[in-house]
Image 1 (cartoon, rainbow, N blue to C red):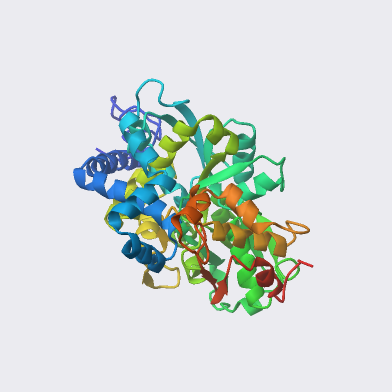
Image 2: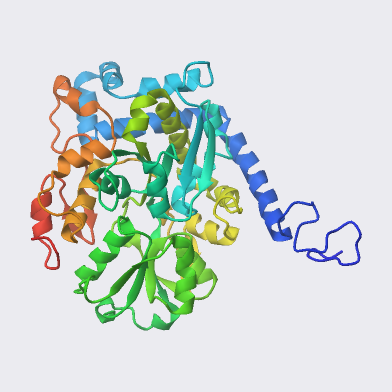
Amino acid sequence: MSEFFDPYNADRPLMMKCSCGRDHTVADHHAEVAADSAAIELRRRSETAEFEAYSNEFIEATLVKALFPHDEVRRRFLRAVGKGTAMAAIASVLPVGTMQAMAQEAGKPGTLEKTNLKIGFIPITCATPLIMAHPLGFYSKQGLNVEVTKTAGWALVRDKMINKEYDASHFLSPMPLAISLGLGSNATPMNVATIQNINGQAITLALKHKDNRDPKNWKGFKFGIPFDYSMHNFLLRYYLAENGLNPDTDVQLRVIPPAEMVANLRAGNIDGFLGPDPFNQRAVFDEVGFIHVLTKDLWNGHPCCAFGTSTEFIQKNPNTFAALYRAVLTSAAMARDPKNRELIAKVIAPTQYLNQPEAVLTQVLTGRFADGLGKIQTVPDRADFDPMPWQSMAVWMLTQMQRWGYIKGDVNYKQIAERVFLITDARKYMKDLGQPFAAGPGYTKHTIMGKPFDAAKPAEYLKSFAISKAA
């Protein structure tokens, strides 16, 4: 019997649907079966004592890392006061106890202020932790009934969050800064709870440009970006400017929803895009583009997307927020482990999530991929899932918003970054610990295209650029 059509079989519908009777194709059926099987295996792994211990330690390490961004300072502190005293001191300033307590209390009456939640996401690999927490049951384990809702574009995500149609959402990491400042919308305080992914983007060019790899020759090119307030926009602008091109006058930047980028590349509407995966790899898969450079080669460890919600939601639903936070961090812990990546690709491939070929997602998540130039590359950290919302990252984003004219006038970088990017409330307790910190909790050093960024000196950094709109 044919796997696809069987016009003389009375038990099968003569439509492009599956013999199981559901309204999908045979290919979709196979994808869903594979996803279900992968989810069962990942769920089994998540229920082992080994993963439970790993997940708890991952969450605690993530929080402690926020307090001690420089490892040598953490070690010096431990040697000075001893493990027992250090643990007690840290427990007094970090929400480790709250996170662990929420795990024990999940589902008990009265624990959570709100249990039915709607969370938005854009179908890209950046949303992996937020998405897979659903089929793996990480939300339900926290007593939450979560509906993860595929959304068409970033402006719609913003509007649904402002209008309270979503309780929380997948964001581009600069978006909560922009929304909080009223850039492009009414000012509504938003917070970044975790970074969903680091790296995981690329500059992809049309195949006709295979022999034109020098950016200095790209004057007149048209590039797609997913949103103005995106790391894609800021990294592409940075890259072009470092190569002597003014992104506002020498090229055209067009906002294009991620799902439409490959079609626009195929149609010749754009010469390339700096976009999220899986669409860089999908352009290679569809033989319409090649990967010019991974963004990890511009800034290794750069943030891309985030998980966040409104300040009002956190204030009104602190226990619910803690449960959400733990569920997403648990999912990030699983996503960070390379041995889970192929199964994760199967889980997020089906229509209700990313609706992409499993082979494309596997290449992105494992880092073994075809580059469109005839080579197979092996880059294990092409995409990763470090959840740390460093406030120094937020300061960098603000410098770029000011550099390109999105923000006018004076900017209190530190105040805005610390208001929007949530690390912990540890800062106010640091004096009591008697420990000097050069950068302080929430801040670390970054290097972008070989140039160090010190979040303590954003004004000086901004003035160092030859190409800029900033006065």
